[in-house]
Length: 83
Image (cartoon, rainbow, N blue to C red; front, side, top):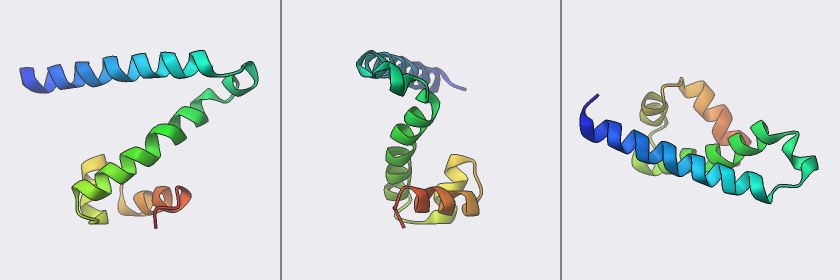
């Protein structure tokens, strides 16, 4: 991993950490019990949208970029009503 990639990873990690902390601070106690699912749903949909735009709708390429198989990608796209 080169220096530029490490810097981007660090920047993304810092941004995610700050955003998650802010998000947690706004949740009520009842929602905090399901935080994993809440966060995954909030992050997964925009990631899928960005990857599909990045690959011009090519599901095979999007799945490859994400490190998942195409069937898994399609399942996620359906769950988020993106198909």
